[in-house]
Image (cartoon, rainbow over all chains, first blue to last red; front, side):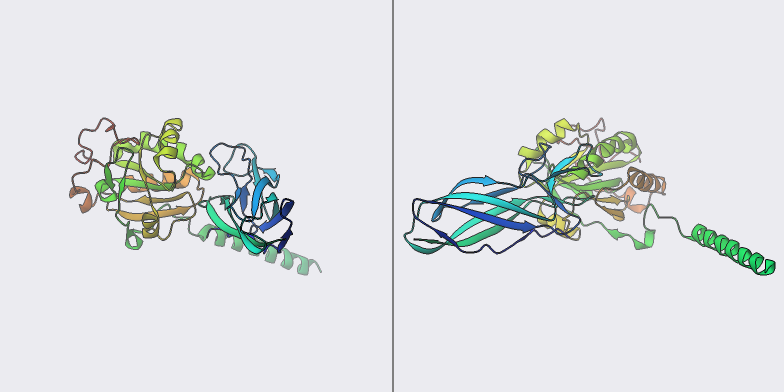
Length: 134
Length: 211
């Protein structure tokens, strides 16, 4: 059974047009599973990515969890992975496109998980929050 | 008091012997399922890198190691060199490895990997339908060892011991050839071709050789 990465609900963000906003996505993997970080140690591994669609906010930068180097039965070298709970921080510029008031900001978190013996296909999960531009 | 201690010691020794006896009576893990417990491996039609259709039934009469894998799968990368070795060692005894890649990126990802890993067996591009036919393959690698009659003799989810595969293959290759082996279907150039779909591994009639 493929592990389901759980993303916590993101609280509403208040932002001012022309300003910046920071959003933290908190996620967790079930025990016994790991996912590659954004910078996997092997070229063949699929990195974790968080992408945001255009909305009231424009993505400026994404800070991924550093993760840890872990050794697994299927790899000669330690792999850069996240386990358990982790956070991804996105810094946005507030464009305010769509005018003032609440609006949805949508994104996609892509990850590829394994356990100690098997790997599971990459998955894309929707991530969204409400932003209220003043 | 001495009698009590002696009785206790005898009891402990007896218990130990009993435990050892019980352990020795545990059936060893079977390399393959019994004949009566084997089910037919679902047939499929998938394309290799050259676009040629490959059907599992093309391989009837051979022992087949069917490997669901992907280029992004670390455990698969451990097993693939074993399968390359199996293909080299056992092919002349009526054995073939068939890899089903579950890569979403298709041949763009698979072809360089085949070259890098020097894969000497047939690779086809899989899809969810094929995975579903085999019970919803999600964890990779998932590997089936199929007997000459096209029945699943063993199934392995996740990284498996090399010896488990070897034992299963040897067992199936040693088994008497059944009827199916003598009524092999012809066509589609499936068994015997290389991963890139070009070669024939020196066997001009892939299904025509005695196994």
